[in-house]
Image 1 (cartoon, rainbow, N blue to C red):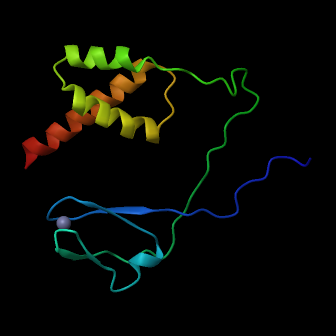
Image 2: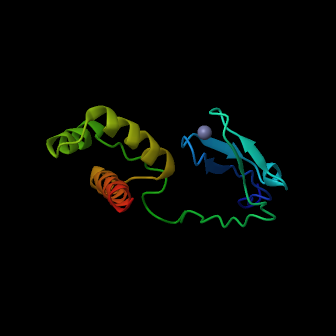
Image 3: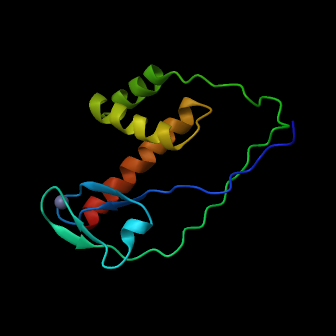
Length: 130
Ligand SMILES: [Zn+2]
């Protein structure tokens, strides 16, 4: 077998939030073609700026690392309990965790908790600003 093959192309979804109801819409680059009008479920229509190109840079995993391939199991209950103790709602936590775990590889619950709190602070900061 030859060495590792690298990807030759990628399919990227661009996510747009309706300015009126915040519903999310997934568009491909082609969908943004002029006039790029999106009709939301709430019937609001908005224009998206045409995207001509998307650059993707894969960051390859260091396969010489000793622990390569070792899956870390996170104690999500522990993380959740810690956040409940801080006053966050359980439903809110599990919803947010799902999103974070989908996007990132966590090696410890501490990092997960840190990102959660950081995200919450950013959200609150935005709200205070408006
Ligand atoms: Zn909408």
